[in-house]
Image 1 (tube, rainbow, N blue to C red):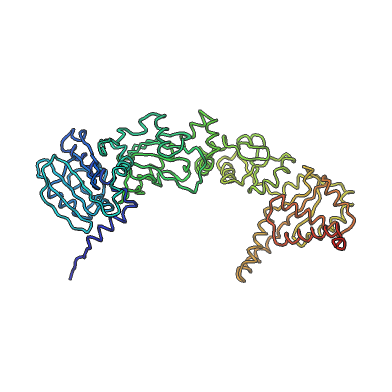
Image 2: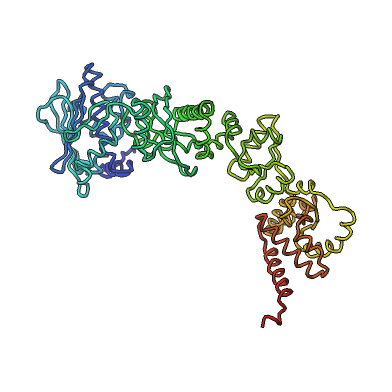
Length: 585
């Protein structure tokens, strides 16, 4: 036995009107959309009639009346279109192609129940009598003969309690300007026009810049006109004048057939283009059911790619015609361009030629750095760069700070994309091979001190060596090879692992004995020379521990619990030597 669904019509109306739309303010957009569609349909029936179209919004007595001189409806169409929920579009029922109209879903009138308890639709189609449709938010409706009128439609909203302000003249005008200012059809609110009559990108560059400032609240760094014919898209991208967090995805103002879809639409630009805010109008992109976002389909993907190409082209033109301006842009929005450079060869070369990176020789582009040193040698982290920059410079080794976002990846990608480009991550211990060794007599004299020093730092897994290097004002350098750093991380993981994985990690560790970190004492430094001359082994050991702690802090190395304990005991030991305990009383 078959049965039919029982539908609570009042619940359906409430669901669609209160949960399909994000805000009750969209009711004005839906009314404008229906009115403009009716005018478009009238032009299809009677050529030239659309050019005479007009939409009037009149407030007063707590009500809102929206009138158009469009095609109107017959009584049969009123029953079919205004009282049937679930049809794909009223446009097909009128016998016109869907492409010509703003709406796609035929349920926009339901948005009015967000602000109204009752809706009156007074309509007449040429050659048919006038009809009055009265719909209530509880799902009831009635149809009766209407007073005679010119062809067209008037929608009257009777406010629901608490929504009166949304039907006031001030609010209606604000919303009509927001949603309908670009419509080609004149829209008038209480006798005052709100439509501009032309698109912002038809106003010239200065007019477009002024529009961007009014719309987004910032004076654009630049403006890029957009044109994607296959999506019927025109518009402009406004470049932000200040840095923006890449994680914050700013929305774009999107119009469909010149009526505002939404003020904050996402997904129109690729992720790397977070430095731009767009205003676009499209005749082909599809809206979602609520008409508050774009449907993510192949056409939107193609439009996104085309806009990305146009933004990329703007950057290339800047590089060719106005390098100073490009430099200004990169200083503000380098993260977006560097993100693009990871995937785009043209942008990769632009970054190489024009973006200055931090090096131990100052701010230098990768192209200039490579021409001077031949190899793009870089430190993987900012702390590593700060530790080694001065020492590397003293050895005439150029070093790039690869610790900023994307910098190391860009350097490596340059090397992968061009065989002529050599890139090397600096292993800190490689610098020690450039230091000057001591003569045999000095080595012999320092042997007792090195024995004491090594004994004090053995428990920390650190090797003590003495070399002569510049700058002379640096007493000690703590160097950790990549192998030693990996082993330290490996050991930490082993301590946290269970028995099963601990056994596996132990087996792996046994296959490759790690290098030990080195504390390199600088024999050219006056402080080190005084320390190595200390005859008292205990005092010499305390001094070495202090140099070890200083090297850790100057090199921005992490301080382990054992390191912190050593710093405390060495300081206390030196304090006891300087001020014997009995003298503290």
